[in-house]
Image (cartoon, rainbow, N blue to C red; front, side):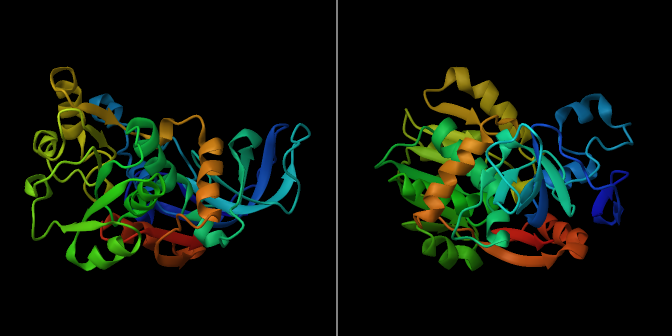
Length: 327
């Protein structure tokens, strides 16, 4: 089968499209023919060897990537199942959040991590959902403890996670304010934000008014400044940094950890890669999607052979919504 293999850390050019052995499912695994995937900051940070603080603290000398085939999002069709698999059969349409393997024609996934694809989405639309929507769901529901009637501010509302966050918050009965650039104001309003703040014209931390929950995806303002938009018992959830850079918000992370014991607001950090209930979360998202309460926002679509170009575009940090790939 064809796959993009990461043999060394670096720019998108290090991804090598080559032939590799087609995987064979273990007893509890499902072999899936990948029909679509999407690119995430998680993928390109792994590509560049940047995702973990541990690498900064002593792993900079590492030359061999831990993940050889990147790709955290996958939508496809079941090709074969292991002998212990009971919930899926060949031909079923599925999707999943992966640790690795989406940038290939086939991938093996444990049955416990695989969910049926939403019936009303194409493979490309479904591939836009797993990591980004899961992150938004965790940030709002689990870490943010969102409640109906709350006022929610989403900083970074036009990106992959942000477009899902605006819709999920509204589906949960919240009143949403989104923060984005001028060119994305209409988009953010169209997906459910009651108010939109253009960060090129206004500092949202000085906009007045208090929000019960701040989902901070963009990481564009300090944790101390963000306190101004929250009441004494508000919640500040940090998801990521500028342009989705997971290393960018280290200052945020340290500030949140340092501030948390001394402030009345609740501070939380969200990392979807550590979640162990992805299948159940995907089923929750599927219900929202099939009820037409949320829908993927797709900026660009690339063919499989142009995955390096797709990653390069995402790294620029200006994509409204998701960048997907047809396999």
